[in-house]
Image 1 (tube, one colour):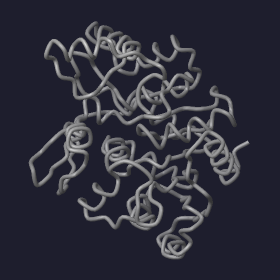
Image 2 (tube, one colour):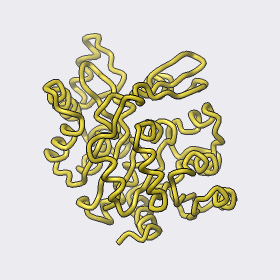
Image 3 (cartoon, rainbow, N blue to C red):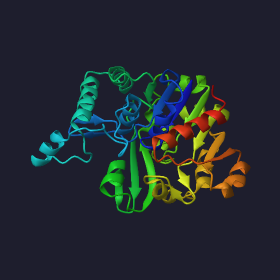
Length: 309
């Protein structure tokens, strides 16, 4: 079994390539839920939905959010009536979120509902939220404290970050099966996700970081930074605000205790020796994934490095 630890963009892009190389039945995905929120009364799990829609083959892979070809009549009517929504939710996507909300109001856990949604959409991979308990990512900035979506969607990450907190993580437990999945996997992959707000909430859950540390030698992470620039999203702003060097070396320093193999872009060889000095095995490849052929190619390279048959 291969397990992917995923946020909402870099992980799903890689996942799109992986499912063309190995069967979904061999794949588990542990997903960040630190960005979950309520929108118009709905329980929205952005990263979970992106992973599930990717596996179902219906993801809008231009935005990496929502369902391809979805309509937005509901969202537009709500706006007309004066109901603002921080996220633009499509009509079919809204139905999935409504189902989740109704089931959770009837005391189903997030794990149970995710399994039901996967079954309904024909997804065979095992998709697990990091926790069934609420964990909320809060971005501390010079403009004040805000949610991740206020920081990213409303402010466009154009504020100075001073800290990031994961509220209630000290009381949250790993979702059922998460620790067993990590321990029993033949290989674990961390996609080119934001190390602060995509991976950080997962690591904040008691027991998950320790499970990763004891499985370090079978873990490969793909750098979300090429040179001094993040591949996508607010990675650079967040790393800089948290005092980390915005480079593959800066990411490697964050990962060094729980990652055995680190894949850098082929043009970043200058970072190799310092990363190897802190104990990671370096692999140089073209890690950019602008399209499906490149995602498929990178997934095959990762499987070769991990000797995953």
